[in-house]
Image (cartoon, rainbow, N blue to C red; front, top):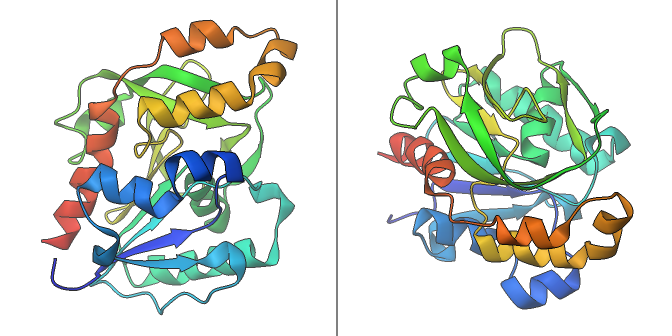
Amino acid sequence: MTSPTLLIVQVGTPPADIRDQLGDLPSWFAAALGLSLNDMNVVRAFEGELLPSPCKACVAIITGSWAMVTDRAPWSEYVAQWIREAMRVEMPLFGVCYGHQLIAHALGGVVDYHPGGREVGCEMIQLLPAGMADELLKQSPAQFPAHLTHEQSVITLPEGAVALARSAHDPHQIIRYGRHAISTQYHPEFTPGHLEAMIRRRHALLVAEQRDPAQMLNALQKTPSAQSVMCRFVWSHLK
């Protein structure tokens, strides 16, 4: 690209030990999309940086975070208002994990802690009938693995939104909000190395929850179909 028409709305940063090992979130998205950081306009919204006015000529990815949407942090509510403005001008939006939940919250959905607890690991995503008919997902297999780590979920969809895929744990893994806005609860930017670092970091907590970190690590695999959903969305709008 000759100019940074891809906006990364950064809504968090990894803990220092993961950041030292794997870098910061923008580099994860750049690698997944086959871009350099120079191809992106990164705004660290979680640190109070101001977002540019929404426009249809720019594509925005709203990242994951280590924060919780239900905390209603001022910077998060500011991004939620920006999302509402972006939807009004039909700016292409792609939300990931926290970004997925924040879009739903901004548009009137309900986000909260999942009653079944956290979802973490490499798990299967299953397309719903609406997903199988969706233009963006027609090239995706009916089931594919994806990397997940989250405690909160979209509990109730916003009015007019449609769930396109689910996991065994969460019925709202991919949500479409309109022609130009979609989000994933899973992390399309993760490699197995990203999720491995997070599982190892939470080893004691996972064991305390009667989970098996060794089994989670053994189940890790590459997730090209999960990643391709984000890539197709971004590149279809950057043409």
